[in-house]
Length: 103
Image (cartoon, rainbow, N blue to C red; front, side, top):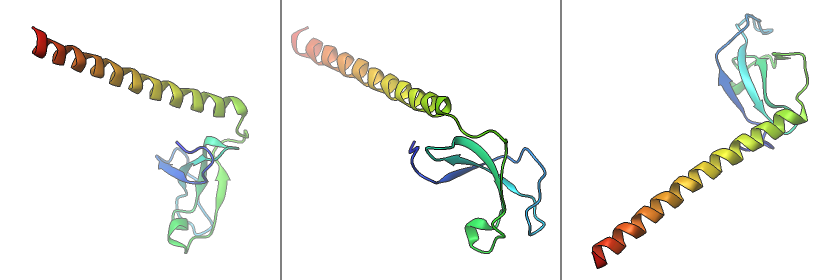
């Protein structure tokens, strides 16, 4: 997860807002340092370059530091769990090789 990027991820539309084109606004999720995991509405044509540039936050509250910290901690926990699983697999392989040679 790159928290500093400005990319977004499309998710199901929870509201029924219309963009300036008259189309149902899509719901996306921001992944920026200032607004990690914050949802917003946007014109569905924006990515194609012919949209109306409609933008509205899904919620009215600005992103907070605790959200960013929680996302980073969750990612770190996930990475640590993966490392621990790899370590267990490596230890099992060492024991298996030892047994093949000496047992």
